[in-house]
Length: 301
Length: 301
Image (cartoon, rainbow over all chains, first blue to last red; front, side, top):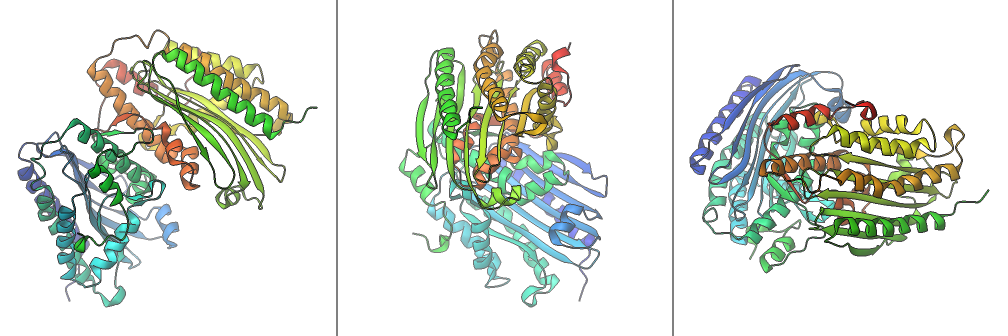
């Protein structure tokens, strides 16, 4: 059986970044990505790519990184592991659209390995519509489920539930959006081999462009009102709350002296907070009613 | 020596909220506070008062609360204390002005007591200008220092340093603003009596209105450009980052199922995040250069 090397993982992630950036530029049709390359003093580095003021994307980032070196003490103690070197690589995406009808999308896939032999994959893809449209939500979940089902019948139900839990914002008693899938520390549990996990993770990465393309279709051209733009800013405020308070990747990046601008590229271009803001329209009310765990989006009516 | 009762503390804080709200309405001249009274299921409650779309204040809150009951487990374990009842009361203020020349102000004073006999005062007052003007910064620190000096020559230097540390945003390598004072768990250390601590805390509360009135003077009428408004939103984004990531009061409120809308009233009305944003004007550059710890604002030139 062919060994999966750090080099192979890194090269594949980097090339996924290229593919996705090219695809998004084509989809956007107006703006292009600006790249910042950065080096990590202790080993490795990355390429941060950001796009702004596009026809579709108001602010977005597609980041690649591959870092290595002595495992930070914070990780060792969290994992209760002895000192060892680590290697970590991945791709992270967050796109904030200008049109409030278009959802925010997030994807992350990553690989982590230690010299002690420990390794795992993690990641997920999820959608945060400002206005939840059931048919669009169903379509997104169906596409993700199809990808999952090609690898295991348990992936979609397990990782969908995991996303519901992970993206639940306790202090607001609502989910961040309609979820999708979330998974972490996938290794050899349940008899999976490393190549099987890797094939799954790669296919999630390859699902990003078609999933986003379908998610924005018919919506990016919809007209919107000032009230709808205002609602978008309120929802973006909630998105910022989740990322700054709860998101483990953001916390980890800030706690371990990550590159702040790359870590916080997920924050929205503009956000609003109004005291005790309440939904006004029926669609706003329905959106809030659907920000719940355990909704069966595949069979939603 | 007269005993300081929970009733006395609570009444004084509540009446301070009244005084400050009346004073701010007069200062604003256009908008008035809206009140929400809330009850805490386990004991106590509060009055949240918010003001918006004023002539001076775009969004602000002046909150009073007095809560009691069994001490939450999270606090007991953090303080390594045995089970006991607690009483906590305080006033919290954050005001976001519409004019970018006017600083954001924050004040909090609070009292905490447990049935085991433990008690302390905490709080602080600090200023976050979007544009730092040295003469205004000096004036603010001088006023706070005068109040502190009436109670102890150590208060201002110690609590000013504490504010520098507390309001330091590590992931941005900058302080939130020009600081002020911050103090916590003031009890009988250094021979202070409870009435002495209480007199000091009350006088900080009474310093709020004159301090804010002076801080906004000459600035609220200044004309501003769109670029300056944009800069204000970027700085407000940093303010939101501090409050959501670092602020202990916010964390504590969210972790202990506090009233979310009251806890998050500190968030700005509108904030922006731009990737890798850099200061353009010399005043913006000077502001960033002054967002540092250990600046002697009293003698700044």
